[in-house]
Image (tube, rainbow, N blue to C red):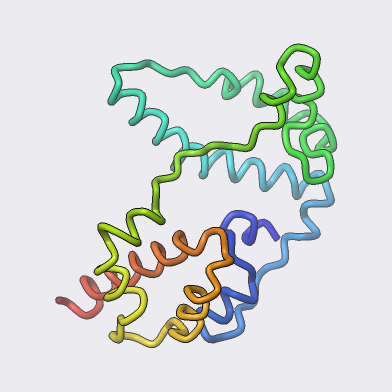
Length: 186
């Protein structure tokens, strides 16, 4: 379950794309116990934040000569959060539940319910315009291996109902470019 939430592609679709049954480790059961939620949140804290989000914030801030301070990453605050019962951290599928409860009378409702904005680049625009030749070559017509199901990739394009289809295309394109450079040697 956790892998699916992060990768935005169902296990079934991943198996179709790769043309083989993938034996995923089922983390669904982990979400329903303290150790599981804590392990997943610790993983995010140590890998996703450090290796992705904080790096992007730091680079964007430095580009504008800004100094940023993430106040909710104070080690004492993190220790307090991890000492709380997971039901306070996750309430059903709602994250940051206790935070929102504490601030519900202070912050406007639209702030507390606002969706995450993230650091996404405009992949759809890039892949359908400036990089469309690369998409044709490395996503739809790459023939130097048979790891991906080309019909499935075409089906994704024809349906266009997958929210993150362009993220999937980006990943396929990056892999195929890597493959061409390092495995084929061109």
